[in-house]
Amino acid sequence: KDFRNNVKPNWCPGCGDFSVQAAIQRAAANSGVVPEELAVVSGIGCSGRISGYINSYGFHGIHGRSLPIAQGVKMANRELTVIASGGDGDGFAIGMGHTVHAIRRNIDITYIVMDNQIYGLTKGQTSPRSEMGFKTKSTPGGSIESSLNVMEMALTAGATFVAQSFSSDLKELTALIEKGIAHKGFSLINVFSPCVTFNKVNTYDWFKQNLTSLADVEDYDPHNRVTAMNTLMEHEGLVTGLIYQNENQPSYENLVQGFGEKSLSSQELPLKQEDFDKLTAEFM
Ligand code: SF4
Image (cartoon, rainbow, N blue to C red; front, top):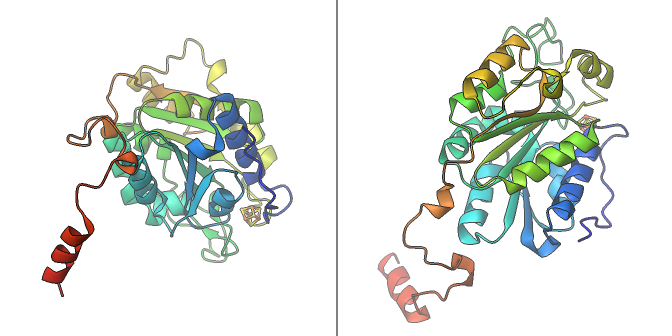
């Protein structure tokens, strides 16, 4: 059950992504998953390197495409615990179309976004999560676009599990990833994961001063979507904890007809080599 490997992360010292890596490793171990039952699929960006830093199946995909790959993995082998991960630029800019459709499809994947409100790998440009007025090399006069409230977006798209955490709260983050793994459907966990090198606004101290834990919101009910939306609007999205969960919607891979009892990966192929040869000959 040891999800550590001998690859040394090349993140900057202090990067929030270290805690996300540790939380995934702890949550997987606490969930009773073993390395050969876990697949971690990532996109492109500093955070995209995470799939190489965990002792499990790993797939470092292409920009914004961690979710299509992760969904293919889950459809082929339903026995695997599948985690997709990447940054806010990866998932909420180029990959946004995939994010919205994976949410509404409710396929059983845990998607962990390391949200640092900037593009770190390319040395600091405005992302869809940067606040209006945010100054970077790509917006020297300050961003003239508003920040995307991804938690509200996820609720609107029909998400069945929405959570948010802060990378310096390893205990809460680990517990939320465990809940996400246990959830039978798509779980989105957005993690404020500071980029200490390029984002000098949204720092660890900034988050400590601005985040509200849902544990401190009186009578908060994570099974009520209206309450969840109202609370997000009231706090401008800056809350941590389990925001919403609906355990009653079946997951996509269990609704697909014709797959049989066993995963595709452990079934005999119905076609023989000569059948493939015949099929391919038609296209030659
Ligand atoms: Fe982390 Fe930023 Fe360094 Fe990338 S550039 S490794 S996001 S601190």
